[in-house]
Image (cartoon, rainbow, N blue to C red; front, side, top):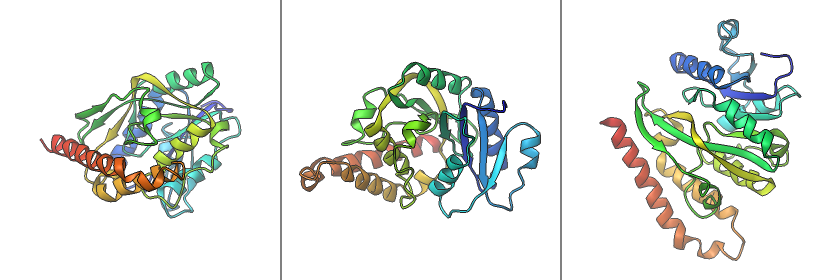
Length: 257
């Protein structure tokens, strides 16, 4: 990695899934040139991963939540970083995806974040389902389900610094919240290619407690509505919650087949 990296990826991990973590880090290297920062407990030894070139640095986690760990990583990035993202320790980026998203941001200065398609894979890397949402997913955020995949997305750092950052009071919908914040300071742009793979399994944060996740996303959407719309938001929020929960059930059944 160069001494003055322009793009960075923060990978929060507890170090409990070494096989997946290795695949995740290797996928970032194949996605383009990036500074890879691990945020992990002090007891986690990352020296081997750094020696193997799979990570550039590790910081000891001081927070008590996933969004807090990601925020800590963002704050610790080198000053030269212009574009940044985070990736779950069991998710993977597609080859060349970071090169594509950083070049897109280079050419679209009004874009605060870029996103694309995302494959859902199981524990054995088998394709379960593909999220092929398009540019329409961005305006849908305020009134419908969050169809913008966080894996593979890339943020402009200067835009991110205009937000209040990831909300540590949220357990699941902090990605929805930050996309809504970024939409207020710039444009959310769509890149029509598969940028990442999200691993769908029993331990995935948004899978194991789907009902709470769906309710929390609904709460976040309501907060971004004009005050006069909030009292009647149940007219569309209840169907959206039902549809989102049902869609998750379909993916789970596909994963079990």
